[in-house]
Image (tube, rainbow, N blue to C red):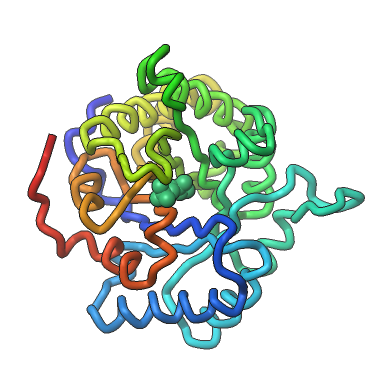
Length: 283
Ligand SMILES: O=C(CO)COP(=O)(O)O
């Protein structure tokens, strides 16, 4: 499938993953400031969606603020349990996240894969759990520096995505089911060395093809193609005000998953306003 131009239906998504930063009191201030900064700048939230992913303990505060002030900021959690309820100490059910009006939940972030030993089967089960509760899973994939050296850039992210798709294909038969994919090369996360837009486009183009190829069997080629065209695929890894527009100028890149720069209201708002940036350097 060739994707020369961005499909009109894919609304860009600028997502801020706060990781284990910002307690619930600071969360209110940060979300308010992001919302006000964007409102003052005339941001069109229907044109570019903005979402934050605070720690679990912040979600209730964010929910209350967003509802009370009618903010257009969307939000989600950084993780969820594979289980729905029961004796799983310390776990958080997707049902609870849905009750807090979360739209999204991140699954398979490389930090969870590395520090909590989550393998593809666990990530697939988490994506399943998200869809079970009407949450959109933001499925993270990406290669380490070692993978890159040994297998090139696309092999590991493609295999990771294929494994998750196999686990959720039965749920994606439903036309309403939605997923978001985030390509985050591990070597680019928190390093200050982002991939180039061209590198990211190359892998993300392959990820889009993988959706079409992998789901053609279970869903039929037409539905698989439609889903591949409709799925938003984000780039993450040292996204900053100065580089975001270059990524979004690529045909298959539909947004950014921002870590460090999402903790500062001004930076995150400026990233969300990428349409007002001039793209100067292209590789
Ligand atoms: O891991 C990330 C987002 O999920 C990216 O983090 P940085 O933007 O800090 O590199």
